Image 1 (tube, one colour):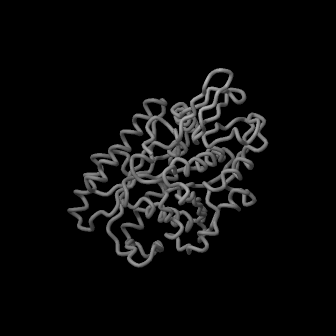
Image 2: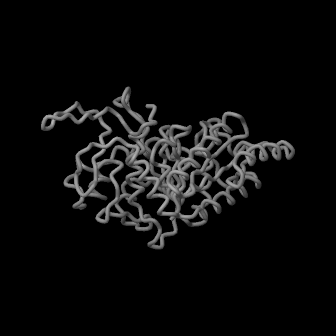
Image 3: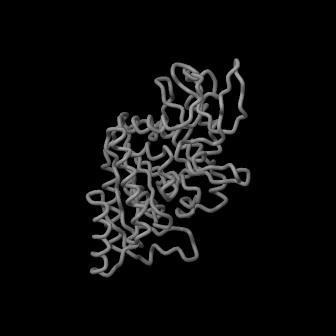
Length: 347
């Protein structure tokens, strides 16, 4: 089992690269799972799923009650489901779900399959979110779900590709903690380079804090077809990424989406880009699974969240992320702040 979470600057093509990697793996019979956790929600349309079919596919962020009941409904560590939130830790009584089990309810509920690639969508902002909605609220149920996915010790041969939101702020969620690799797509320009440097710097900072290396993999995109220019652009990215650099995709007529959002089939790619996708897929599949890193990073995320000071059961605390008025309890007040996901949340 390998989980890859993508990031980078806006419009750098991370969704396109994930789409092509998923298509490549599907063509090899590996049935990848691609989760669209980007508020833009374009992944299904890239695979040619029409709006009606996408609209009939349940959105993960709108089905959190189902996930809580399915994965923690029989857990005696939680007195009731009101005490289960998106950052609730996994306990020995938590239910695990199996990506390789065709009868798994999560797969049957959320997956829309296209040519061997299994697609899920998180959902995006609604009118009711205006003024109070947050990217973290949408991603939280995905983190909750991935935390309870088998780690691969059961023998599954699977790949989960998660298309995260773009920009630095997306790194402030706990979604990256679930990944075996932080997959950054970058263009050879200054804006993209600054975001890339920040991703590397932030990952190094996390690694220093948790005591485990964070695996960052970098892919160039929209590179020149001119050999001299390509060499210069590739050197530019390699100077930033070092041995984190995997491969690059060049400008390609097959990748242009002028009047349709549907992405290209693999056989339409230039030979150079097809080989690049094959190299990227191989590198991602080889990303090492380090459960200790995943746990340490999630513990870091839990520690940075705001917790109520009332223990629920056996050291498990209830996180308060929704607005609740101050409440008095035996002469003291517990201040429950509105929308607190961590000290660096800018929303």
